[in-house]
Image (tube, rainbow, N blue to C red; front, side, top):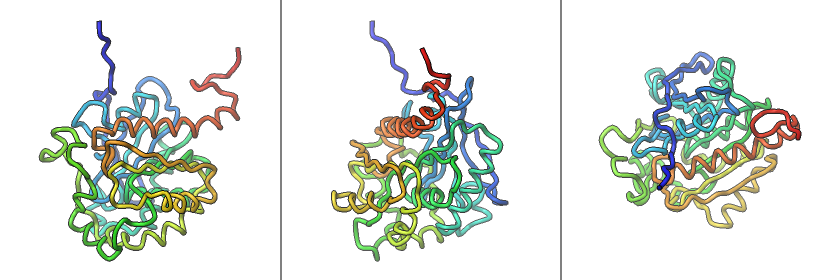
Length: 306
């Protein structure tokens, strides 16, 4: 008899909620453990031209970060960044990078005041959202942030800087997706791609990122994980570039670089999404271990001992 293996409970509830970011309302998707308090929380930030639905792919069972995370005992909140979702009407031009980071800090504080975040928050972010996440992590001074998990982000663009804003405006299709066989059938059906126009202020910040990165990276004080897809083409990720990239995180206790095979830039929408999300949650578990050691807790949260 062949045993069936569950890929993830995609029937788990995902709710639409709003959070207050210092007077700015941001929309979000939320999935929480059903029967136990969360071990920790994952707050996810999507890339440019997408929205929070990026982390709730349903083209195939098991691809959604929201349902996978809650099934494994974590609260998962995917924010629509400023200029996306319900905030798009108020901010038709979006926000610049520093303002977005400040908005996310305020949104995290509001969310944590009303929801159980367990041992703390892993900030997981993709592409332009990873730029915002770096600014957010650099600004946070408390111990609520457990780690920073970033994908589709580097510090040196793979291409001429003068061409990048035009590539962003035109969608950068090949850079964003890579080979189409990396995505399940139905992933590109009408309405399936969680896309929204990239706000003007956001696209204007693209060319300035390399300088901004070197200001933010040294101020991050938590473990950092960087994932590059096999077919990543926005960023340089050769050995020399990675040495410089990781070396910039001078205050981070640990920096890990991962490679995700069989994946394009938009990792969370492809066949490799589940593998990538499981690796991210494993990194979160690694971030929890020092706290559990200090508190004398076993992984399930009970007092250790024989």
